[in-house]
Image 1 (tube, one colour):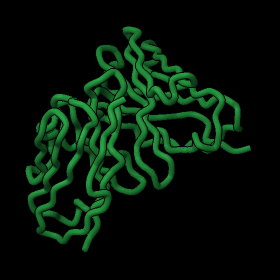
Image 2 (cartoon, chains in turn brown, cyan; image 1 turned 90 degrees about the horizontal axis):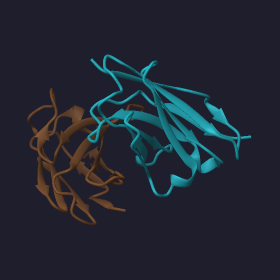
Image 3 (cartoon, one colour; image 1 turned 180 degrees about the vertical axis):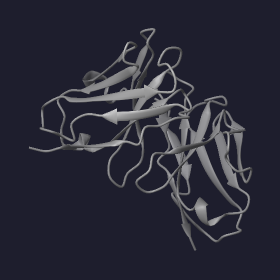
Image 4 (spheres, chains in turn orange, purple; image 1 turned 30 degrees about the vertical axis):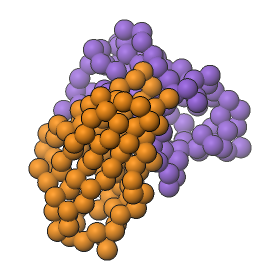
Length: 107
Length: 114
């Protein structure tokens, strides 16, 4: 199994801040990586796929990068609506896996 | 616009079988993979498995012995069966489309309790 490890687990930030979340894979997943945003009581929402492609209608302040085993999700200028939990997910192998999540909190 | 809707019992007894259905509207279940994902209260997402109507299925190794997925193209639905459930299987269960899951159902809470 490929293990996905996100850091940090919790991130405190303010509106307007630039923040970065890291996701590391236990082996290469090429660019078969997605990022999701989840708010309480809601289904996850796809933000980024194929490591760096912005999903339709997702604001351009979200940026994904990386390949192989190390990936980042950057939010260039935090907006109030961005405080949520973020997950990475690999879909390179037959069996997919999610990271454990990063909770982005208001400082 | 593709929409997914999970349905099934909200409560299952320990040792019994959990059965859920995902109904897809706005698109065909043929031609792509469909997944089930679950999330215990206050915890992260766990991928359960995926299937395609062509017959390919892949399951999370930790659940493989208890999981079966299938589809019904006539109803544009796909299903999840999880046998021998325990309280640890209590979670919100989601269905979703594709490798990068671009469409999700709203989720359905399944509680394992006697």
